[in-house]
Amino acid sequence: MGWSTCDNDPQAMNELAFLSAGELAERYRSKQLSPVELVTATLAQIDALNPLLNAFRVVDYEAAIRAAKESEKRWLKGQPLSEVDGITFGVKDLLLARGHTTLFGSRARVPDSDTSADAPAVARLRERGAVFLGKTTTSEFGWKGTCDSPLTGITRNPWNTSLTPGGSSGGAASAAAAGMGVFQLGTDGGGSVRIPASFTGLFGMKATFGRVPAWPAGPMMTLSNVDVITRTVDDGARMLNVVTQPDPRDWYALPPSDVDFLGSTGDELTGKKFGLYLGDSKTATEGEVAEAVRAVARLIEGAGGFVEEVSLPVEDSFGVFIAHWYAGAQHLVNQLPKERLNLVDKGLLDAAQKGTQLDIAAHYGAIFARQRFGEKLQAFVQQYDALITPTLPILAFEVGRENPAGYDYQSWFEWACFLYPFNLSRQPAATVPIGFSTDGLPIGAQIVGALYKDAHVVAIARAIERLIPRRSPNVPSGLIKQPSSAHTK
Image (cartoon, rainbow, N blue to C red):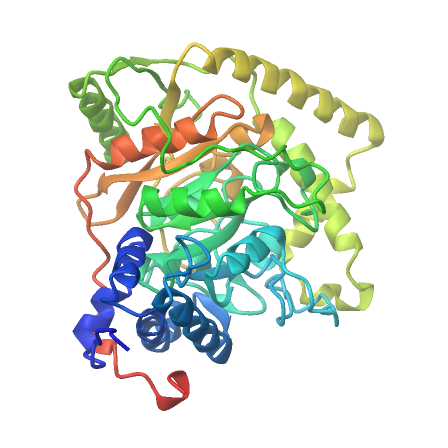
């Protein structure tokens, strides 16, 4: 057929699983590589590593191979459906994927019997030939910043399996970091894409609310976003070009845009003005994290940009956020069968109970406080090309905990303090890896832009990425074995 082959060599297959979408498309085009080879290598990677990492709840081997073979035929004819034809993707188990139940990390929810629909982002990827792999793990209903649930247990970080990858899109991030899929779809209602992307050394983006169509609506309503996690910014840009296309089912969706996230201007940092926000007196940012972000600021200045340290001119956003979050948790839990509430994560039940303490006046007060907060923050950001912050003030910590040992945090909201403000304000915010701690753990910086300036945020992230040496986690390639015949039928 004119395709090359990896001959099921474990090392070659491991390397193949880490190729970028751009490299893969070029090899498909030149017939150096087949989508079937990519999928075979990726399924071998999943077989070897998922028992260790617990990133996928379910993997659809047969459908993935079938879709890869169809993609192979299109590339052979020189008629791919798009540049992402034959590129693999996983879907967080809060999003619908045709043919599979969506379990939300919960033992309490009775699964829907109708599995005929795809969420908008899933539909767009399939329409353009991308290869669905399976559903990735999440905390129960995505309620917290780590990734363990009553349904699937603990998900682990490929950089150090005793540590959390973060959450709630932890399965998506763990999979991407370990070469178990090129594209990953997650959700972000208070940092749930940016947390795990930062803890695992990846690019993750929460676009302007409504930029990526979402359906059905998440329980946190206008805090909730469908988002992308990838190993590189360019791969994230390729995903965004696809998943930002319209879908009539989402009545919050923004009008169609002809922006090319790969071809966006503003890649250079020269002449750009950045506000550097390292937190306030209530934020205890880890020393190594703060220094890594300051080092990035120096690199930006060395590349011709201007950086000034700033304070955000807004009132404390914590109370505004939790009022929305607890109300959403209460509504969510109220939809569950009462006789199954004993199966729900206790932390989620506690959040729902706090939601019952909000009367209608308090709820409306939080809505108007959010509006004032967003107006002030949007006006402030207009002074800069972007804000730069730590993505998180801490490094990845032990699995099985909601909060790291040795800190005074009472909830994950407190250590997600750089993230949820931009869910409230609806602004685009991305995390990009900027280096490592002395223990070799990834550190991320967050880039925040003005509303609707999503492509500009991607361009800035790309420019920063080019200044930082990259590496992949020390995934034990010795675990990668020849795939079973079931994967290659």
